Length: 346
Ligand SMILES: [Zn+2]
Image (cartoon, rainbow, N blue to C red; front, side):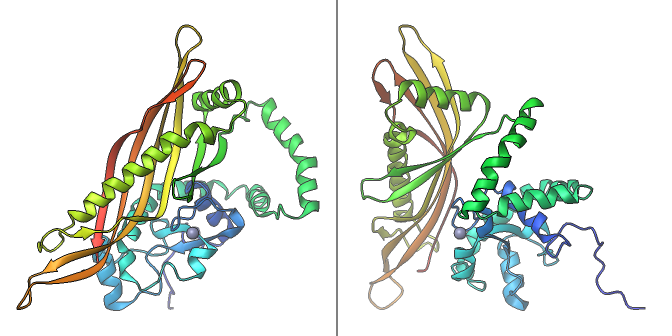
């Protein structure tokens, strides 16, 4: 007798018998975001992606696995290699399946996938005895809210669901918001907010009592732009210092950010005397920047210059305060630089 494959039937992996549940769990655990462009996406726009593509074979595959520090036996269908991707990033070939220049990005995504894998398995398995509930949740997330009839159905039926949850104290959901902040070049970037507990109360106080005439975006505009500037300056000097092969530093043009993501994760408030109050806001950021670089090439008979492009990603956390005593003042963010990766094509 020949056995085809040795996969236990209930193993949580790509090709799982309930792919919708796996997709839904991945979507939740990656915070509703495409792992490639980092944008918040609707569940209906999300697909399950192999971070190290299934199309890679032979030498390309082993080379890629070596470079991201995974064994050649790495199971590409396991949750350690799965992440939610949006239709745009998957469809336009932005994440070129055989393009090795994306490996640093893949490496970071693989680390995140590995971190989340046990929880993915646990959540998918928890639905095993609750198939109807799993189907209902996927249905709710997939419903077309642009359809007026479906919207009406939600309006009519959701209050009863919320009332039921509320009666059991299960309605303390995080506060979700996406703020649009404009930089001085007129580009917009969005700051997703997902706050719970004390943070939720502090934000409600900040926008409800202190800034009733403005949105939260108006309050955070200045400090977050300050953060954006700091990230650019930091990346610029890192590009200039870039010296991968020991041939000397480069001259870099001004970096452009292909994405800049700042998340606001904690907000706390402290009261002071005489009606003044201080808020501390903390979060994390991640940016991908590129710049044109030029440098001397001494390898020929005469020193010439070579031009190319440098790319980099930088992550970190930030913290700033907003104080209010009838008028508001805010500090420039204090930045803690985290992981950084730089690479170039020269
Ligand atoms: Zn995307």
